[in-house]
Length: 156
Image (cartoon, rainbow, N blue to C red; front, side):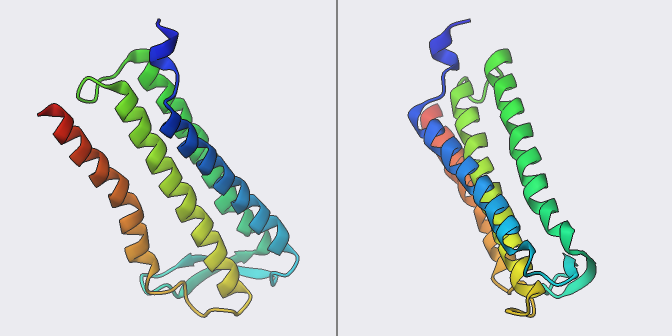
């Protein structure tokens, strides 16, 4: 297997570093705010962003845990793309870069939800905010649309 074809590109390295910095920031946020949280914190929100279920304040660590596991799992999938050379328009590097961009988007999403959950739990906000759902949709759609357009242009 050619080492050069499996090595990440510079944009991929940058996205990966940013992703893990944000995952780390999520942990720092949860740890630093833990002691100021009330005993019960929101663990689920309805469509309007209003808390509809509560749990022990230690549940604030679920979001960083899920984020870390999710990003690590995607990293494993990305390794499979390189190993098995699964083609995306004949370019596994393009698929790997797209997955890394989506990892970055997901890490931003988890950090944002942790931050807003802490704000609701501490009374700084009553709801997650009406902007969160459109933000989530954009965060996931922008990289996907970007790479679809980029792939379409490359295939011509």
